[in-house]
Structures are given as C-alpha cells and as structure tokens.
Length: 368
Image 1 (cartoon, one colour):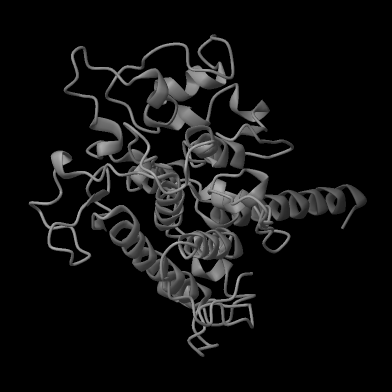
Image 2: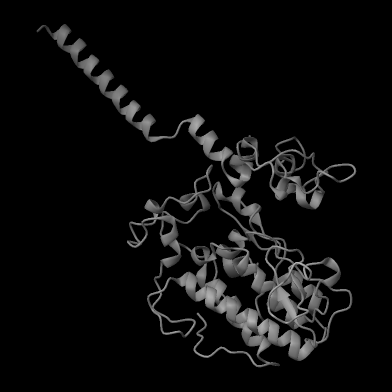
C-alpha cells in the first residue's frame, strides 16, 4: 500500500471513529422530542392546575404582581428582565393562560441569573441554573416576617385581626438552605443548621430532579444508598445513628423520624389551643386557610368545618409560630432529603415552646 493510500485509509478510520463516538454520545442524551414529552407530563406544564388557573375568573383576568413571578411564564421573564424590563422585580400583572413554558428557563437572561434573594432578605450567590428553581421554591414568609407580626406582643394573647401566616407551597429551597435562608421560624436563642450539602456532585436541584420531568431517578441515589431501588425506597434512607423520636427504632428512614415529630407537634398545637386559648383547632392540608375550629374536637377537619366562616382566628404569637413551622415542614414532602436536621430542629423547638405553657409529650425526643 502506498503512503498516499495509507494516509487515506487512516483518515477514513479516524473520521469513522469520530462519527461513532458522536453517535454514542448523541444516543446517551435525550432528544428535544423526549425532553418536550417529559416536560409536558410534569406539574410545570399542567394547564389545569390551580397554580395556573386560579386567576382565570378574575375581572379582568390576570395574575397579580405578587403571584406572577412563579405562576406565569410572563411574570418570570419579567422578573429576569428577559422581556426588556428592569431585572429583579415584576413590573406588571401577567396575562393568564401560561404555565412554566420552555422560555421561562431557556431565555437570554437566564444564564446570568445566579443569585437568589429569600423572603427573609438573605441572599445566596454563586449559584448555577438551580437559581431558577430556587426562586419559585423559597416560600413567601420567614422568621423575619413572623417576628414583624409578633414582636412586643404577649405570647399567649390572640393578635387582633391576625390570620394564619402561610409559608406557601413546596418551599424546598428554603428547607435546603436552612438557617442561611431563615425560611422556617427560628426561635431566639437556638442555633440552626445552614445549607444541607449532599454529596459533592449532588448539591443542586437538577442533580436529583430531572430538569424537565422533575422526577428522581433512583439510580442516582443507589451508589451511596444501597437500599434505594425504586422511588418508594427514598423515604427509607437513613444516615444518622440518632433516635430523634425516641421510639427505639434505629432502622427506619429519617423521613419516619420527621413524621413522628410532625405528628407530635400537631398534638401539641391542639393541646395548646384548647388549654390556653380555649378553642379546639384542627388542620386540613387541602383546605385553605388550613386551620379551622374543631367543632367536635376530633382532630380532623370535616367538610362542614372546612368553611371560611369557621377558620381559626385566635392567633397568639406562640400558636402562630408553631403552626407556621408545622405547615412549613408539611408542605415540603421531600424535606427529609433537602435538609432533615433543619426540619427536625424546627419541629422540636416548636413543640418545646408550646410546652412552656401546656403539657406536651416529648419523651425521648432529641434535637439535632
């Protein structure tokens, strides 16, 4: 074979090799069509969700400035300044009819958005694309806003015209950031864990959640958590050797420890409402504003009780703080992974505070 032919042969082999590598890499990545299908099946694309249709019947129909950031494509690109407006604020009400569209995250302004300001005023910088996720999952309230409502008021006297302070839904980034964000109510004199740093390559939202599907692939967890085979196994993950709820079970997942303290706090809330304020209270996760007068004192909210006219109105500072933390933890069902110790600290401190003035069962509880 001549040198010229050898060169041609080597060139062909090289080109074919590069092509094969490219094909393998391409096959390993999802296509735009596949990603679009993942997104279309996710909650971010649910056009019938209350999150996106809540304002359709308003006159005129529009998403308010205070809600548009997270409940409208138009509001989010307004906040980023991708529509030519001033970045960092929503300038106007948003049109109805949108969801978290592709352009919400895929727009010219998104790559430079790398810092998030939480409702407490705390600011996290040096972030990656997870900043987009964190902005709409940091809640609406904080230690700061609760203190503003309760400071200099007697702990056990109802505040006039005070309603429940709702932390809002799925405050995952506020949980993950812990004391660095102050999203839960943090009691004076106590210390709280900061941002929960998972394994080095598993520290952002989209390290665990599919950026388009929002789902968690158990295989991303199983290298470190051998028990995780299916998604249902995630709640059985446990690294700590501390029995936080005092039930003697050291094999249950950390989610079970959180669930036990969460249930214990609810019983403490009910005891406080009856013993100190003289009116029974009950909680319903599905009926706003969540807390109602428990007319038959059974701890459950019946359909006839879940009425606005029957909402609980005796909000003393002590009760407001404890109920806020009860909902803050309950509305982040993935908190056992986002920052379990922060959730446990909030629950423990809330129950302990109620125990200053009523009987609260905390036998065996341990604060992280």
